[in-house]
Amino acid sequence: MRWRELAIASRVEAHGGLVERGLHATLVQIASRDIRMRKIYCSLIALLLLLQLTACTGVPGITISQGTPVATATGSQAQGAGEEQQLAQRLFKQINQDRAANGLAPLAWEPGLERSTHQHDLVMAAGCGLMHQCPNEPDLGTRISNQGVQWQTVGENIGEGGPVFSNDLAWNMVSMIHQGMMAEKPPDDGHRRNLLSKDFHRLGISISIDAHQTLWLTEDFAN
Image (tube, rainbow, N blue to C red; front, side, top):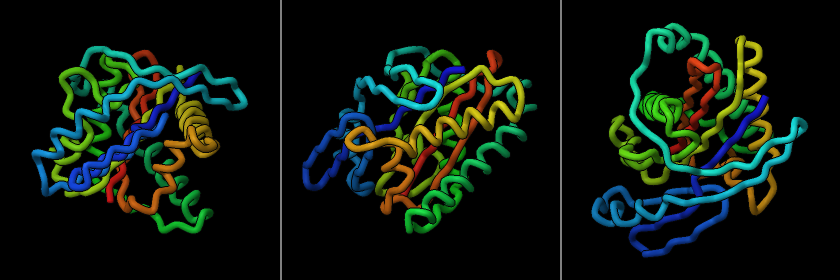
């Protein structure tokens, strides 16, 4: 089995004109009332990075690469949606347990963020690969706004692994990806910082398993 994960990593404050870039995680912070400035600074979040993660199974490096976009759900994907949603809810519960263990308030489930994550899963699985923004796909902030979500701060974690041939194997893969994120250490801890951020109050998760039995995971966060 193999798995990879990636998080978005720069902070953009439109009004202050401040741009702070981290190495392996992106927090996009844009004042939503200034649309022109948001469009200017959104271009800054396209970031190439290579992150070596370690876990008990030995994890390969992560790379961001170009690919192809845009997909729609197939019949087989729709049939598996029930199990995939159960996996997403199980992960959601685990994330809030981890937040509680760190003295943080739980995140609320946001259906608009779930729709955003699901569409992104389909685009990645269609050939784009593990990327936060695929060719011809809107940036993270626009994706979320298009689902009717009001926000000032957003973040995203993504992961991929497989093959998974059963629901138990799928959960083991999800758990491995999540544990890898939670085990990160500064400064390469962007996934963990998103998961344990005090700035975020809402979360949407999508887990999709494609025809090749590859599991795709997207987590979108908003304040």
